[in-house]
Image (cartoon, rainbow, N blue to C red; front, top):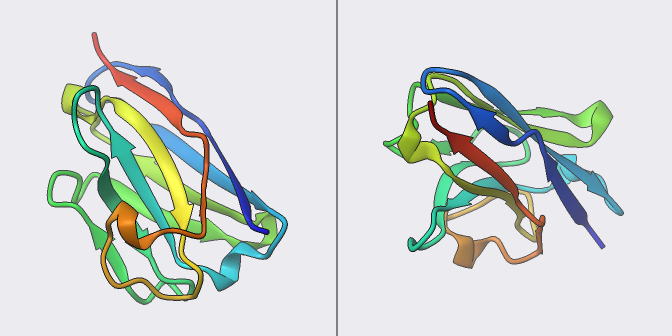
Length: 126
């Protein structure tokens, strides 16, 4: 069974950067599509970025396009979310999740059902 653990969250000033990690155990992550999602207080969980196992099908939410980047290190069984030029509205708990296969259709929590991490808090504040 694929298990996911996020790390790398924290407190950062506006304009700063963070790199989130999603490390897998149990199965080889390179065979699965992965998504990053976030949930701010009082809001629904939303898709931030999703990528197929090959990296050929990648999505970024409009709110993060040009600032966030998703990548994989298969040797480390880890997927990253590089977040640059962070804004206060990026404050949320960030989760990674996987599908049951190598591709994804909709970058939405309802379509990533195989495994979820516990989340990592990102706070952007001066």
